[in-house]
Length: 187
Image (cartoon, rainbow, N blue to C red; front, side, top):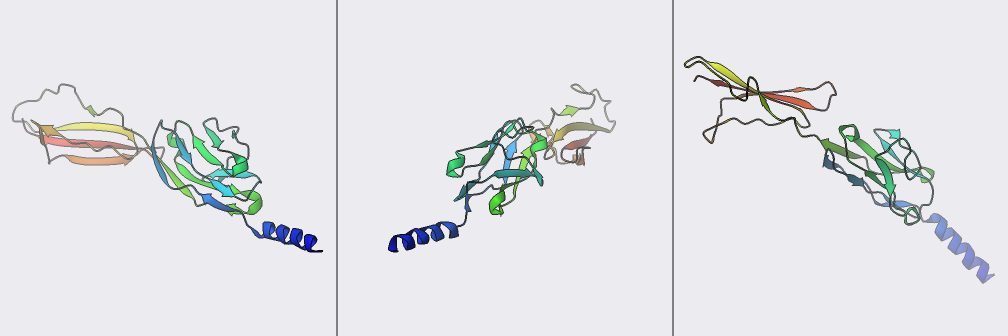
């Protein structure tokens, strides 16, 4: 009778220990082209684990078919289900969540911010701009396709020109920006 009671107590104790996250994804920032890992470790759980991207389920397989640069890393028997994103792109800029579906567990939501360097800055009419003496002119420099927008600084003989007028506009993809800086000069 004592042996049965002991087995019953062990079964009840094991059943009442709920699964929990020992590691959850956190907000991260990565430069486009770099790889990034979003950690997810679930203790006491052996069921299916999936990741979501902006609420869309990526699937339950370790290699995530249809997502060629995404895979789950770690030992699933140890509860490791970290998401590896190889060579991050602007399309990976999203909110991610790790889910243990059968235990109804959801991790913290983690925002992955993908930074995109700007195109090379271009001075309109450059590289050499010919101007007429004593005639006002606006030198214009553009740098586009960046996230966040490029900062543009003008220098003359090593000193920063403070009179530049800076503006930025959101590109059609809703994530990258173009920056323009006009420097009024009177040669």
